[in-house]
Image (cartoon, rainbow, N blue to C red; front, side, top):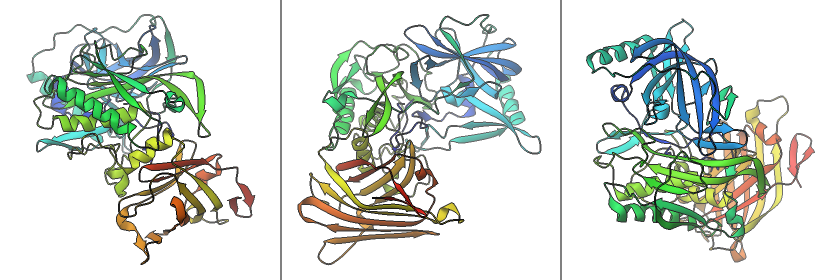
Length: 552
């Protein structure tokens, strides 16, 4: 379970941590990417600056051009990407590419409706040039922090997130295809002679380290209102579009262990996605032409972002986060004729996307994820599109209840907590011992249907996580004692749970063969999730005792 301060471009862990992007791409082929691009260049990033015009936030990236594979540009181009930060104002648009001054890049570029240049399909249009030890240059695109899908057999499946070409092969393919295509006929692009008003020079432009953020209104019982634009999805129509929105908002409001309540206030004329106007909105069909249209059922499926003020922060459950002031989701147009586009899958898409808008990231970004609770989560990085629609799973419930705890789900007390490190031994010889009692005020534990999740973290990093699914328990004949054991390599985990009266569960966890070096940082935060209940606890300061850090 990971909670992260991220909204999305549609994306599908829970971590109270920065570092997880939120975007859904339907991967475009090089040919389709090229068809949407008016220019393809090789160059180096010369300058980066954030621009705030009082309403929208953009980032301008100046690139010194070294080679032109398609189109006509000057010796310097200025690429304008959505989002960025100036002072304490931030607008986080996920799926936008990352840059740093001096970076060697290949860029597929197109002109926006405003006349400015932007990478084609956001992060899909940017490659980094790297050299091997033999000196061979490669163009590498890494989309590991976004939800990357591919169309296959009429449905969407997870796609490879890293693409690598020999630089000379990629440029040769671009030149060959461009020479047989119609001339783009656009004018050379000039760099800005002076910085636009509101510019703030940066050395990096990245959404990989956004601030930890959440909504704080639910803590005082206030609901979050999402406005839906009057323009519904053109293919599905207003009824199915509105139903998908309602179902997605209701899914995150349903667990009894969370204070979160999300509602749609009905329809209203859409606002620009790029504006920080204080309105949280779900928009369909890209009404202001702010993202690229798809091609051959590939491209940007949807885009999301949030606005925040990093000058103020607040605490919850002993942790600190910035306040989200606005969240936006926009579903692209042009996918109506694709075989995977229907109301049920739209409901799953919006449920995932709304999860980002409340501060959740991916349950996992591992295509080979072995933990079924992470892989089955609606917040898994790859869409399931298995007919679930607007449904959240055990890890999703644990996530939202940890980030927005209701407080009445129960409590946890500890008799013993110890992190033991062997002196002069590898870090993977650490041992974790946790003994305590989980007192639930909701329904009792149902081992045949409930997943038990124990998550230990420090700051924004997960230190240890265990998820035990219903079919993994061994039960005594009377059904009062459960045991879970798992061994992988040098690591062994043993968890015993005893049912106590009045919904209390006594548990003992012993895990060996771990690397718990990160747990030396205070404070430690532990959460236990069981079915629809979740309890979070900030551990008191641990005392040093020989080779161990212990409580009490």
